[in-house]
Length: 296
Image (cartoon, rainbow, N blue to C red):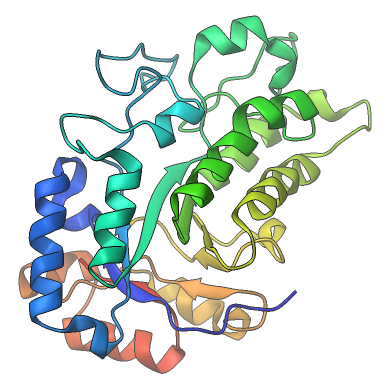
């Protein structure tokens, strides 16, 4: 496989807006970016974070919550957006970003919380020692990505829909929880020898790559996950926030197995504490090591 060669620099909505980002904010942002000609300075990507997803009913009514308290999630969660926040939906978001001359990106998660689907198709999910679909922190249910029916119903449609809409940057979150907090805590499920946690994990990412294609940038999140090598273009090195320690520790991996992603670099002085250091130092470290970055 070929490691991604182009710089990936842009803006993420998360630290600036958290879950309060909407279509009006996007339009205002794009207006400023065009006026300041930021594209000429290498800022090309706009990545919307945890704000848009609509739940199974596309946000028209409050969706049911799963065992961990998260809203029920399925393919419609990532493709049908909250109408009150994003009237134009996924397609409108992509069009607005492209029309402004930038590349649309998106955050999404591998977690699954829709209890109704789990009840109807328990064989689609990793099970605990009692034979029940296992629940893990953050990820809740873990889709068995070696189950062809589960892949066809729950995984493939999500990434196919994102590709068809024109998204070219996909950050897949909760992957660490998927692998370690669910599958590695339920090793009895793999005792028959038909699969392993690693093979299920890689099958999930392989499906994403098949649907998104090689021209879409895939960011694995979070933490160093060697199981993702060859299937993703980048890996977020630490937890939420800038991670200089892991960037140093795994600098030899950068550009060799993937691009090291430091999460984000805050450039507004008020956010100095979040960067764990001086703003100029953060920019210098990121630039000299060649890591990709998104900036709020």
